[in-house]
Amino acid sequence: MKKALIAILITALLFSFVGCKPSSDGNANADPLAHGEVHTDFPGVEIRIAQVYTEEGKNKLKVIWSNNTDYEVMYGEPYAIQRLDGNEWVSCSKDEMTAFTTVGYALKAGKEISKTYSISDLFDVSQPGTYRFKSNCSVSVNGKGWQDCALWADFTLGNVKCPDDSKETMTEVEWAAQYIRTNGYQDGAKFPRVEIIKNAKELNEYYTANNQTFDLERKDKVYSDTTIGFLDACDQYDEAFFEENYLIFVLLEEGSGSVRHEVRSVGQTSDKKISVSIDSILPDGAGTSDMAEWHIILELSRNVFVETPSDVLVYWGDVLRWNGNVVEPPKPEPAFKTPPAGTLHTPEGDVTLTAAGYDWTVLNSDGTATTTIADQASRPLPKDSLEPVIIESKYAETVYAYVKPGKYEATDSLGYFVKLNWEVDPTSVTYACWPDTVWQDDSTREESVVFHDDSAFYAKNGGYIYEFAVTWDDTGAGYHGTANYYVYIVGGAEHNHQVAEEAQTVDDPVTGYCGNTQTTLYIGDKEYSFMYGHSVTLTDILVNLNYDPMRVCRCRPEYTVDTEFGTGYGINLTAGYARCDKGQADLTQEQIDTITEIIEWAETTNCKYPIDN
Image (cartoon, rainbow, N blue to C red; front, side):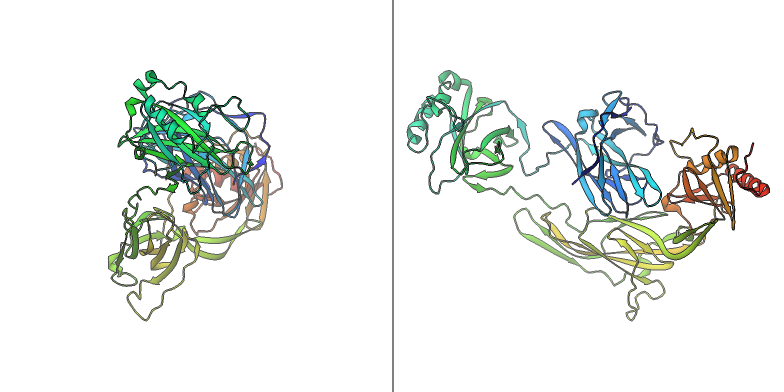
């Protein structure tokens, strides 16, 4: 549940998104992405689209915010919607200035929450196609303050559905309703009940047949806990009315006389039935203990006429009921008749995983179940059956301790960070691996794997086949079972650094800092602090590099730099990179030359707080 950390401010945060203007975020020429593609600036802080649907004529988006880090995250209300137009992402804001209330919500470490956005209120999403939801948040990194994080997730619009897919697809029809309290408790009676009234004669016959069961008389006076009388409500239904209209009576019984009702929708289904959605409402939050029976009188056009009560579907409290019994809608075919596929995200690219062996059960629409057992050839699979995934040694995840002055010390090696995603989240994942030198040797036991959680692990140095034993429990989705997946990863291949051909600068670089900004350079056991020209130049390079968290190699930095905008920047001029806690970025030859000049100048001055020209 979202928790407001800061009070709602009087001011509004303004996002300027001109309707259907090209995006300025650097993605203007991005290739079309598959539904569900996501991006984050801070690994572990993610959003994903859980549901796209229409409700009361509005397009809505249910977004899951996930925090799989050890830090606290804060996000707010602002967001943007873009549409993929050819190869260009364009903004779809309806207004030139879209305002959002400034409020902060906390997302604790290891938690996730859902938030629903009514996207068609602010954005033009009338055209079918691929859209992008964009937002941002801040991450509280220990000792480093709040760090900004931009996120986006793609989705498609077109044939969106209501969130309750158990209801029949229907077309809204014109209707009017009266709500008449007609007390008449009957032991064992079941509700709701439906009656069809086609003409004035049938209306009179209904009154005569049921007046001894229900209170269908007139009311001389209406009190707070009553309504007008049944006959008072029916005065308008004469022969002229029935020439073009007819009535549907929906009879309900409530355990409290305080309960009132509201017909939410009436529509005609594809098979020409009438669907009625009714809510029970307790206005004051607490009700009396008296029973109450009701006649809800629906007026409909003969253009949508139905003959029998069985042609009327009553959704009472969002559940389909008939004569007091809950009617289970036909169960849809399960989404996964075989185990879901997985995607392995490595620094070198993505790999699709399919089940090698499984025990899988699906629930059929007729209520029966089918179980399929697919045996795999061996455990693990033979080496020649898997295409190797090569991960260069530069991507090894090493635990570094930052030591001043001027040092990073390697304290431990975790391996190569690899992330897993599945078409549907599993209940559990168990990891195992075997070195490629002993495959299919029955006497060799599997080795353990250092894993981050059910969706990430660390691949080892060298060639290994990895097994993921995945379980999906029965959660009512119509399928469950277990499956084994395999991948062959060779970690630690030699690598060579290459100078960047162009500056790897962020889309929105930091500017405007003062010339007296201070920078500290650590070279070996010496420390050099300086301001003005060289300080501004070095800060400008390091602060505005587009660091990639997936491309941190294990080559150690040669120099360390602290700026007023960030500390602990590591520089290796031999390899040609800079890194910080956001990741690593390659330097251009011009940047290498500039930094070299600054370092040589700092060593030459050999004093504290030199001021350069």
